Image 1 (cartoon, helix red, strand yellow):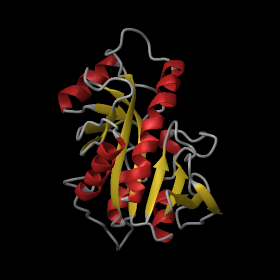
Image 2 (cartoon, rainbow, N blue to C red; image 1 turned 45 degrees about the vertical axis):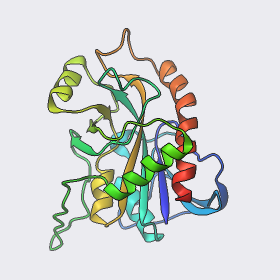
Image 3 (spheres, rainbow, N blue to C red; image 1 turned 45 degrees about the horizontal axis):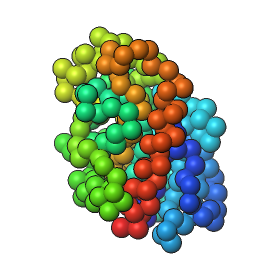
Length: 241
């Protein structure tokens, strides 16, 4: 069973024939929104808007534990996280889609584990994304005729503010290729619950100091409108697979 967690620009899944809207109460509170159950290309799928249906939740206030626990409780085995990110390198400009294979976590203060007293989870995180599920996404992209970059390091920052030029310079030196605010702790929580998790990142802007001018939300929205068309094409075939 596949679930899609949609980020900025993907608060609803076009083409999803909705059959049920599921409210899930978890030991960690309420998820970001009701989880939508439906059919996409005749395949059952769940969809969850990470920031809420009205995009009202900031990256650091998303209840990641509730989101992942709720999906697992519904029988989900595979999760696709969709993210809007900034590009650090010149070949990762607006509208480029990246299927990252690594993460560096710069976030802080987020509830990042299901561990509790007497139940400490030491999950292996050598490869933060499921290698087999990543390949499913890459194959789906090729079938859909959607160009993707097959790998990259996602630098997860705290947000909600964007980064300074100096911070992006540091991220580049650390080996990051793209920068966003929601890859963590989503990925590690999925790993702790033994879910196969992969990420699709749409570059919506060049990161600080890499663009000709200031980053505006208007420019980002224009890229989202175009780029999410390709994301949806990729998702449709990934679900079928």
